[in-house]
Amino acid sequence: MNLDRWRPDRTADRRWRWIAVDAFVAYVSAAIPVGPSDVTASVLHGPAVARIAAVVWFAAIAGRRLAPATALAASAAATVAVAVAGYPLTNLSAASALSLTMVAQTRPRARTVQLMVLPVAAALAAVGAGSGESLVLAAVLHGGAWLAGDAGRSRWAAARALREREGERAEADRRRALARERARLALELHDAVGHAVTVMVTHAGAARLALGTEREEIRASLGRIEDVGRTAMADLDQILGLLEAEPPSHDLAASVRGLVAGLPAHLRAGLTVDGDLRDVPDPVGLTVRRVVQESLTNVVRHSSATAVTVRLARTEEGIVIEVADDGDAAHPHVPGRGLNGMRERVRRLGGTLRAGPAPSGGWRVDARIPGRPA
Image (cartoon, rainbow, N blue to C red; front, side):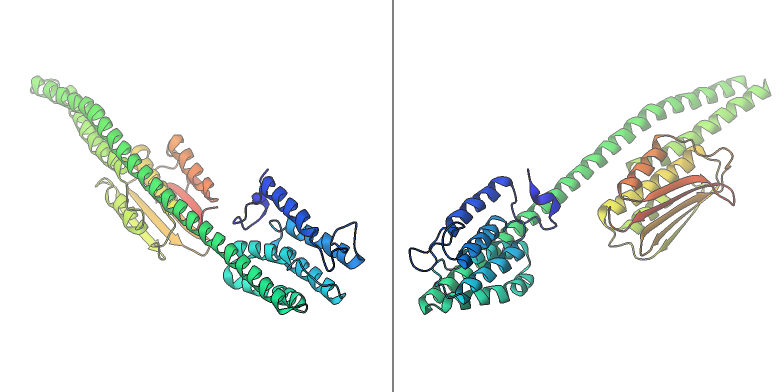
């Protein structure tokens, strides 16, 4: 069992085996003589003050990974109590030193200083009341404990930074691989579907020319087939362009402008950007681009719209996305994997997405994404 989950600071290893080691060290430390050899700081032997101090020292060492600041204060207080009671100290306040190690390991340096000043000063004063040599040894012990804990935290921070860099590199590699796969799929679709449509248009044109001036209604139908085929090819190129595009990860506004600029010529498009989008976190920026991309793809594929507007806004709560067209709201975009995929992307970041007929007509996609991933 790992107790790290319920602690906000995970720099301390709180697995049971380490807590068991601390408990063993606590037992050994609690048996170190306090004063003459016939007086021991154990739970069952010695004066009452020494016995209580032994319990506190034991609890402080055994629980230093769970509550280091409390363990430091309690162990120092026990050391002071023994000294005030008139019993000489020979254990150099090991409990407070061991607790100080965990405080330094689990807290920033400034906070460590705030937490250690009073307890450590009190413990050193109590130990130093007996002899100067004990004071020096106790000071060295606590200083070494602080340095050891601070070094442990530095190693943990360096390891975490390394893991984050490795994660960023892995994510960049994943995106590049995804971009290559999307480009490959776009090329395959273009070649397969494009070839079929081109052959269809070519045969329709050949049949229309073969009829000459006869059967005008058939020639007109064949001409419409040619026109629809050419329009389908143009739309296919635009849609595959949206599929293939992988915008820069740190320039959200520019990448969305590229998506809008890539729409077919017959579709009037407008883009409004409110606020600074340059420092949007990568997961949020990627989701924003995908929502805009899928919304524009649906406009091209499923609507009769002649105009579409895209609005991005940066607010205190996060990012607002609005994509609206003037198509026929009575026959909206076909719901399916694209719309469900958008909702899932937004939901993963703690946001919401609504899509449906707009009050003023047409179809509208409205998404709200928190500024930081949930």
